[in-house]
Image (cartoon, rainbow, N blue to C red):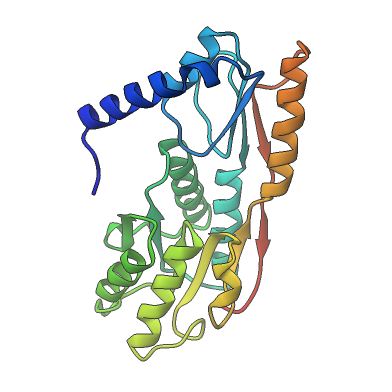
Length: 238
């Protein structure tokens, strides 16, 4: 279950006091994904360099290294448009606001480019979980004028959506095409294997380490936000 803001603040204070000595003995730190701004501020107050990976926060001087989430969504949506799909749905997982908004924006703007209307009935904001993907897809498949393709903003949602399509007696991709995002292990476990957008996590990690070493050494960093290009991996679902 989700904790309240008050519970989170109490937990944060407890952890901060517990590990305060360890924190201030660090030369630098890398955060991956979502992180509370207050945590970053505590490190920076002590002049400890911070690098944020796979997320973006608009904080002065904070170096962020992320995938091109917008570009990845454009790649996926454009591929579906070029396959001839004229009705495309979106199953959007709840990630950090910056990541979610970039992927949604890429989807919407690409549909506009191809003069394909956005149907709000087939856009869902859900938790990035298998069960949520299956549940919402099951509901959408009941609609007579359902989409012929779906862009899912992570592979786990896509796997759940595939499960719902199969249980409805339909086929992927013949009846419903599906594209995921991340190129996680699950994309190669499902059958047919999932067409998805690959994030170069290794490159992001290596660049984060090199950037942190540069910051520790007092070297200037040219860009505060570094975006790593994504790659569309075409497999069997679209």
